Length: 232
Image (cartoon, rainbow, N blue to C red; front, side, top):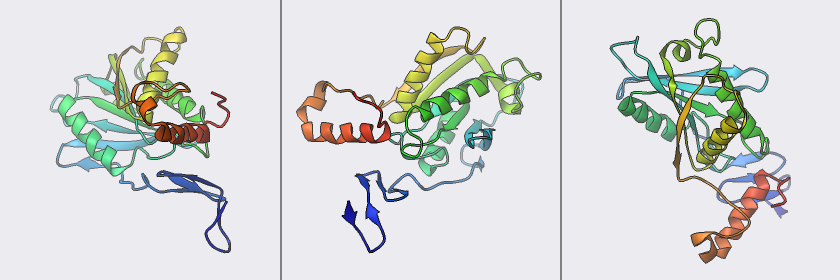
């Protein structure tokens, strides 16, 4: 432990992401902006807590459209942040997803899963799967689901999972889970995944990982920190 003053000790240092004392101090990814109407893109977003017992929520984005009767392709998005940083409310994600929704003319659901280390893996996978099941509950219209944007505007024949970094890892695992569990999502059709700079890691170095053993060792420690039960 490193003494930083007479009262606090660093129990765990995970550069450049966070430090752990008797609490977690995140060093990045903590800025937030509210869901809102964005005048530059015409996109409107709103936050919905779909799991009150845990507080897990989503931020839903809807594009400006003259024909509100038209069904829109649905993208479920998982943000990055090494499984321990970030949120759906981070300014860079808000800006990026507003642009994506405008340009692609899609309905988008961004999942605010719980973070490690307070909630070690597999919590974030379970939160993400719960979000997908909640979205899928709207597929039959008025008798299911309470979120009107998902009920009235989502085209459930055109559903895609997407994410960046750790979020791409989550999207990958969610697609696998959907394929392995027969009829888990009913008529909910996942047509594809979009993985941006996906974060995958393993015991054996692959490609450029072998060229930088110092970085390999550092990322190994990251993984064991967020998933302490992994014996690799």
